[in-house]
Length: 294
Image (tube, rainbow, N blue to C red; front, side, top):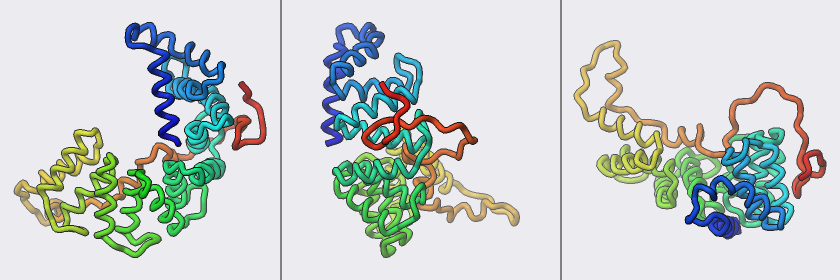
C-alpha cells in the first residue's frame, strides 16, 4: 500500500511539472502542489509536506509539514501517517513523543506497512519509548524482513549474531545480512563483508569481503570505506613495539553491526534536546487535540 502511494505521488509530480520547462516548474512547484492538495489530491499534500520539511522551494517549516501530513493521513494515505510518526519520533514540527510514534507505527504495521513494523521493532530493540523486548523486536523484524524490508533483515541478522531474543546462530545471521544486502541495504552489506572477512557463519573469503566493502563505499556508505581501508592496512607490514597498540592490529575485528545500532535509521533518536515549551499537538487520525489546523 505504501509503495503504491509513493508511485501515485511520483506520477503526480511528473504530471504537475513537465520536463519541457524544468526551471519554471521548480519555481512553481509548491504553488501547484498547494492547488492540487486543496483540490483533494492527497499525494500532493504529502509532496508539499516534504517540501516544507526539507525547505524545497518554501521556507523550512516542520509545523506546516506536520499539518499537511496529518491532512493526508486523515484521508487514508498511509505514507502520510508514517511521516507523522517520524515527526513525533524526531520532534520536528511536533513535540517529541516516542510513545505516540510507537502507537502510529504499530497501527500501520497491523495495516501491513512493513517499514512501520521495522520502526517499532527498532524501538523495542533499543528501548526507545517502549520497554525493551528482544522477543517482540525479533518477531516484528522477521515479519518486515519476509516482506522485503532490508533494514529489518540487517537488524534481525544482528540479533541472531548476538543471540538477542533468538538463539545465537551466525549462519542464520549471514543469510539475513546477505538478504539485506541484496535488498540494497548498505549496512547489511557491510555486516555481510565482516562475516566473510572473519569467517563468521561462512568460510573466510577476504577477497569477497573487500569487494563488498568497495561496493558499499561506492554507494556512499562511509563504514564500507572504513572497513575497506582497515582491510588494506592490515595487509601492510606492521612494526611492532612493546607499547604500541599496532601489535594487535593484525587481529582487528570490528564489532559486527555495532555501527548499525549506533546510527542507521532515519528515525534514530537524536541526543535529548534542552527543555522547550510544549508544542501544540496536531489534529489528525492519531491525535485528539487540535491547535494547528489547516
